[in-house]
Image 1: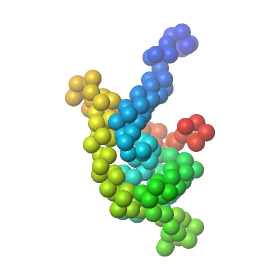
Image 2 (image 1 turned 60 degrees about the vertical axis):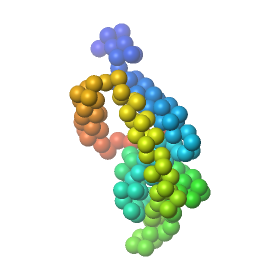
Image 3 (image 1 turned 120 degrees about the horizontal axis):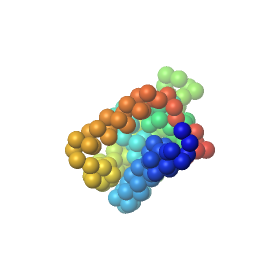
Image 4 (image 1 turned 90 degrees about the vertical axis):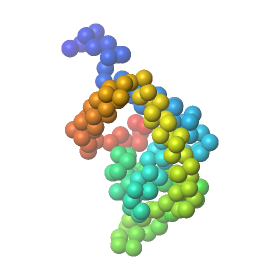
Length: 153
């Protein structure tokens, strides 16, 4: 198959990138008052689900490389939203948890973040939304170990 047979606008990678760009734009617009990026929101959400986690575990949960995860966590820590410290069980590891301020901010922005997700797919019927999500989950499961390196983000 040549590039003429598969126009750019029909290519899965191009479409996945465009959907991502659209969602990030919507998230940024709707969540602007909170000053949290989608990556930071994912980390805050992961910490809300796992009272405490090391940076390596968090990078795996949010599917980011450790360098990007560490940078985002440092920015969240500087804002007082995340507490980082040496793990009690592994001195080489950084343990992370939400602060009360981080938990409060996450709760305050939850409606706006959910709205960004909803607006991203609002033009789809409920059945199409479910199919779209299931298709994306299938792709992620098949390629689950792959992560973008920080130089590609």
